[in-house]
Length: 559
Image (tube, rainbow, N blue to C red; front, side):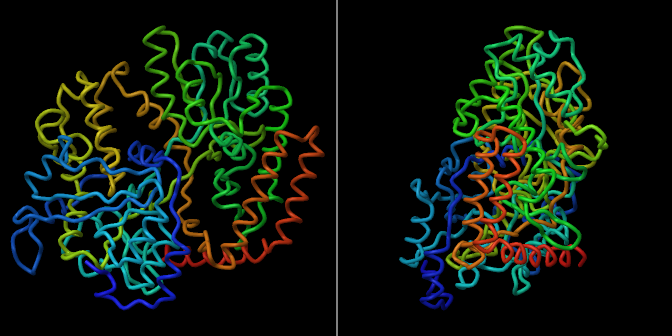
């Protein structure tokens, strides 16, 4: 259906969309991170979309519902709906069929083509922010406000503060969040090779001094092992910045934010003492050959191979559990003394270790789904998405239809997992892997609390490796950064152009500081030059913009 036959949009708005819309080219690691996160007791929206007739509610399952779905990512290819056990059940029992629209590996071009032709899909799954706002400004999106009370799962599970953060400048809600949460989640931190660690006497690994001394030992006694693996894009170097200041997640100085909250203003990343100290430290590790020479250029596959074969001693990343779980399983099968553990986040001596946060989470979660004005019955689509994010929808898309891996629920609505859940791990994992790219409306709190409740009943040797470390370390050491979401300006705006230029300066300086500097003084000189160069291209203006957006977020969170 032609979106512009329903909503009038100016040529300028359409051209703006074509120029400004961008697609993420990364992987879906956030999805895994979200799915591994957490859940409170189910709310009374359990069967909201199947409620008795009245008030004009759409009755999910009474009549067929079909809608098109487009994932706005170069990497994303939606699995065929109905080919796995979960969506087959939904198709048969809820009469819902979802028709995929592929990006063809070029999401930006694909969406521009759909806009020009006037043929938008019914649902678009994409990042929050400028892209959504450009679609809204063109009159291409349907607001959800009239649906929230009729289909209450989203409102009850996400909460008012999260929904307020997602509202557009016109005060309306157009975005359905994915893996939103009201409690900590995330996996950032430090993975340690258990066998090497024990063979070296299980020394203290708490401070940056401890870590340095340990890595020197590893280099001396295990020449074929990478002492400190920093992952693809040297992400572990970013994680290290959290060790040099309290209450300071690495996202502050990461490329995605490049702004440090100081008082009521955003200040320069290049002047930030924690960031500067972390690069001095990383440079020392590199000069001592404790970090691999290809740290900034290695592929994701190369990192994975090193970890699953046990060729690293310590690994720092935003989600080290992803490869760590696979490696732990493979290595421990070969040798019961091998595998991986996690350690409490590393900190600089003198700091409070309980105020060190290597990672971050935010209430809004990962990305969002929007319903376009091309949808023939947008309320029906919302009713499905709301059911999908509710307890029943989450149980089915995560663990399959009732009967095999879960049978019934407890008084709080959590699934009662069967014996097959722990004995048929291969089948369970295959089912869950088949639906991971169909989890568009993940309810972090419900999924994680259901999982954690079950894990707490198991003996230690039967517990999931990931869940163990999430409950003991990672979820306790992730910082709530909800107030800093949506700070990135639109790519075609003046601030967006500045942001691009500063980002290029940042990436060059970060790599040079670690790889090229011959001393601490040279590291700091590189960062000082980067500060001067950034100011030349308008960094102060960008920081002012980020400050204003931050203050707007704080106001919304107080509502």
